[in-house]
Length: 228
Image (cartoon, rainbow, N blue to C red; front, top):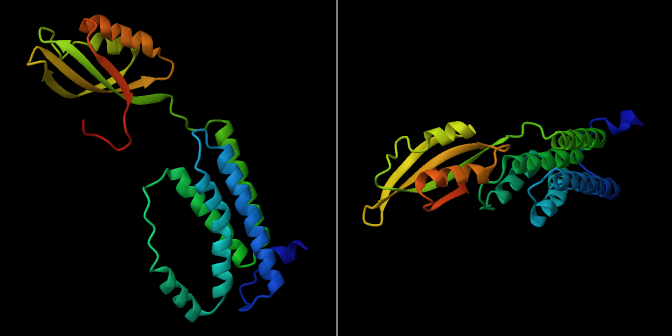
């Protein structure tokens, strides 16, 4: 039985209705398993459209492989048909891209009839993703943020907050200096790296004591944004 499941079925150029039905059913099950794994291991929430896509994608890939078989002319025809399709979307999270490749690989394995390998591959990777998420593997305990501080003109901005940064163990880089209120105030923009164990309130209170309780803000740095 196991030898039959793990056998190579690429030599056949035709498929029966029942084999196609079984291929679709297994692809749907594997896509559903991958989709559930994605939902369980994504702590920042997820898109319903993306999870539904992961269920459908293995079926689409499996059917394409079934239709192509060993027919080279059919493969070129399908390639030409799909070349007119344009997908426009913003670059996603690297993990989302990995899940897309995951579902495509599962669909490809189903399409060639390697159902045993498809199930084995899917189960192992789903368990791996669950374990990595459970143990919070490679989690970054430091967060990069943007600190904007307003100081009076009589306060030297070069080393005004060096002592505070060192006291709280905050990495910093001065990115921008500009004057406000007709030159009576300075606005400093820092890139800061803050450890999650640091009390942000205590850190901001220490900054306020230095800048005379003028305006300040601490925000997340937008991904890929280096202009301020």
